[in-house]
Length: 459
Image (cartoon, rainbow, N blue to C red; front, side, top):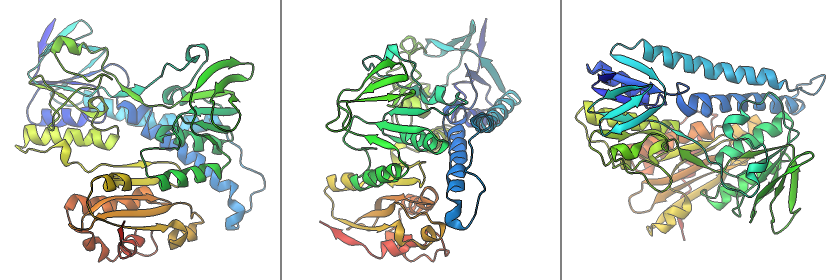
C-alpha cells in the first residue's frame, strides 16, 4: 500500500511534534512515524525522569540536613525506591500520553507506529506501508554508547535507560564516565544511600569545562563521600561474587574496584543505523550522525535532520530550536541558522552548573584581549542564607567589543541565574547593559552586575 503526504516526520521527540503542528496548521498533510515511545529521550529516559529522581534525592539530602536549619526529625529519612520510581514513571507517562494524544488528535496528521526505513530520497516504508513526501524530517534522537571495554560482554551493565527501571538502591554503584550524565546519577544514588565510585579515563571530571569548574565539581561530590578515580588508563570489567569488578589501573589507589552494579555513562550514539539512509543517499559521519548544513538540511534536497541525530546539539532545548529554525525558514520566509545559536546548558548536580558560550580556555585560544571576573558562592548572600555556599560564578568578556563571551555559575540557582547572561548575549548588547541593571534582592542573579563591575584584564 502506498500513501502520499506533504511531509513525513520520523520520530516524535522534542522537535517532531511541534513541527507537525506548524506544518498541519499551514495546511499540509503530515505522516508522523514513531517506533516506540512518544516524547523521545527527554520525556522517557532523559530530562523528565532523571530530574524527578534528582528532586527526590534532594528532598532526602535536605531531610538529613534538617538539624542545620533547626528542624528536628525523630529518625533518619528512609528511601522507598519503589515509590520514588513510581513518581518518576508517572511524570514521564503523563507527558508521553499528552504528546501522543495531541498528535493523534491533530487535524491533518496521521500517526504510523513502527520502524521507518528509507526506500528512496522521497519514500519511507513503515509496517509494510510505503509513504512518500517531498519533505522528510528526521528526528530519531540517540542512545547510550556501549564501548568495547574488555569484559563488557561478561557482566550485566546498566545504561541511563536501564538504570531508570531499577526499583532498588544499588549497594555500590560504579559509574564508568565522569561527565554530565554520570555525575548526575552519581550524586542522586549517593543521596539515595548507595556507595558510589566514579571512574573517568581523563585526568579530571567534565573535561570540557575549565579546570577550576572541574575541580569545584569534584569537591562537591567528594564532600558527599562519592569516590572519584580519574586517569583510569585501562578500564576493564569482570564478573565478581559481589557483582562486578572494575579494573582501573590508575596511578594511585586500588587497581580494582568491586561493586554491586556498574553504569556505563560514556557518551551517546545517534539512532540512525537502521533507517536505511544509504537508500536515500543521506550522508553521515563516521559515528552515524547525519550531516546537515547551517539550515539543518542534509545533502539530499527535501530531507532535513533535527535534534540529537544531527550532531549539532545533544539537548532538549537545542532540538526544539532546530524545529524553530526549520519552521521559520520553511514557513515564515526567514533564513535562521544553527551557527547563530549561542550554546548554553546545565549540569544538574546539586548545586547545579549553568553554562553559556565559551570556556576560559576557548576564549584564550581565540587570541582576543579578554576581561574576566570570578566570585565564590560563599560571597553570595542568597547562598549563605540557604546554607548552600559551594561553587563559584565567573564571566569572560571581549575587552574590545565589551560583549560577553562566556559564563559559568556553579552554585545554588545557577541553572536559572545564567539566563540573564544568555539573554544579554543573544541581544548582542555589551556587558555594561547588564552591569547597570537593578536586580532583585536577595537572589543569586543580583551578584551578576557586581561581578561585571569587578572585571580585570586577563593576562
